[in-house]
Amino acid sequence: MKQFTSVKDVPDVKALLKLTQEVKAAPYEHQATGKNKTLGLLFFNPSLRTRLSTQRAAMNLGMNVMVMNLNSDGWAIEMDDGTIMDQGSQEHIREAAAVISQYCEIIGIRTFPSLTNREKDYKEEVLKKFIRHAQVPVVSLESATLHPLQSLADLLTIEEQKKVERPKLVLSWAPHPKALPQAVANSFVEWMKAAEADLVISNPPGFDLAPELTKGVPIIHDQKKAFTGADFIYTKNWSSFSNYGKVDTGLSSWMIDAEKMSWTNQGKFMHCLPVRRNVVVADEVIDSAASLVLEQANNRTYAAQAVLLKMLQNER
Ligand code: AN0
Ligand code: CP
Image 1 (cartoon, protein in one colour):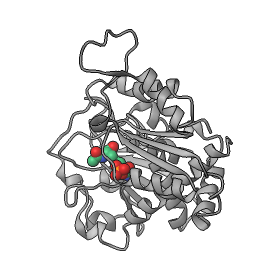
Image 2 (cartoon, helix red, strand yellow):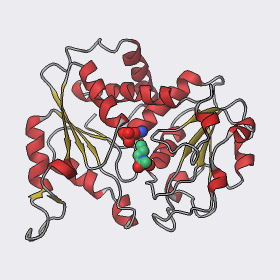
Image 3 (tube, helix red, strand yellow):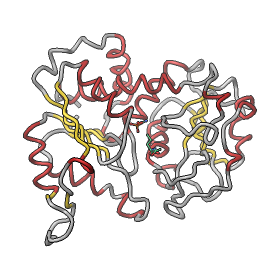
Image 4 (spheres, helix red, strand yellow):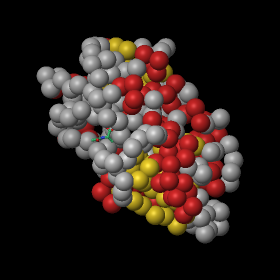
């Protein structure tokens, strides 16, 4: 695998899912594979889970890890070609990506969207430029529009927890005071379309995701109708795609509580974390036996480990 930015980079999703299960069952099996290899993790944005689980995955494989917060600790990076760099930026992406490639066998990068320029964000300019100028494989640690390591961990969690062959999954929009990316939701849709599951999306009018991504997936604006018979409720806030980056603070009734979970088929509750309690989900749900949030976070290690192993082995 030369890059891991989307489900489209994975030739066989089933086989990758199986590998996550194998590395989870025997995490230290491949210690020799990563020996004297270095993973560089670059963050333009905050992280708890991605940062620590990906480090943990690399250490399980015997790798060394270097982590850098590019915004606070590095030089300001220029992304555009041909710029006269007499303003704020001090170093060009061309040199930065090439130099980091000399120190690392694999690079991971987190780069959130502007949420002001939809076209630019959806072109994934920062991630793509980085990949173009890097000389080693690149793993997305959440890009402007996708979060594939999260989705692979979610797929593993659903596989472990499902009681029927083809579970019903509901991606349910949640209230949130601040504008958040569409990345986790987009990515969940992309991966679950490739999985054995019946996916429906439930969100208020004005919050439909990108039509190219949701093609073929029912979008139900009535939350109760969507939840009926659901095996998994995957909750996430995202800011508007059509009214790009905008929030609506008048939709607090979309929060997940015990009554809504009672509409499901004894459904499980999922969220990628971090989550705002009693805004996105009520304590009574996240603290209940139906909550899978800690399982999801744990599985982040094995999702990352499977991807890093494929890259180290230079396999598709
Ligand atoms: C980010 C998001 O919504 O994309 C990261 C989630 C993994 N969340 C926040 O910024 C709160
Ligand atoms: N779920 C997730 O990616 O969390 P972090 O933002 O803490 O990495």
